[in-house]
Length: 186
Image (cartoon, rainbow, N blue to C red):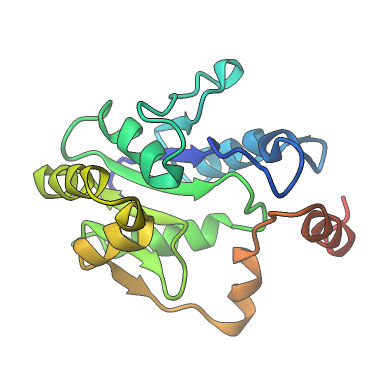
């Protein structure tokens, strides 16, 4: 398997949660650390954190408040061409090593994501990816999304089984978090 770098997207404001999602405790550790550990266990040579998080050597967004695309653009500005990135959101703790492995398998594509999901995403950095990111970041706010990037890059989609769909649950509200904790005790 090729070398790759994991990226935890942890730069959001967590406004609907009412507190910093990255620091919510999942099985005894903050979500940001849980997701870093998952990426390492899945084989990442390096793990980066996107977001202004000095405690985690986070990469602050060069242009704040542009969502995940802004965070991705700041990370891409720091990596070399031919770097393979696997991006995971900080609030998706049910992801597994096996699912990340399936995301990495179709290596001939520069953008890979699961069907009906924006994240996690595998992205092989090249000039075309950089140009697409630059164009989206310079465009109207309505075009600054991971969905638009995936469309521009003709993202390859990996099928998901019914039993795997639960792994893509992310938490944006206290109610969703409470339900996830209740259904997945330590």
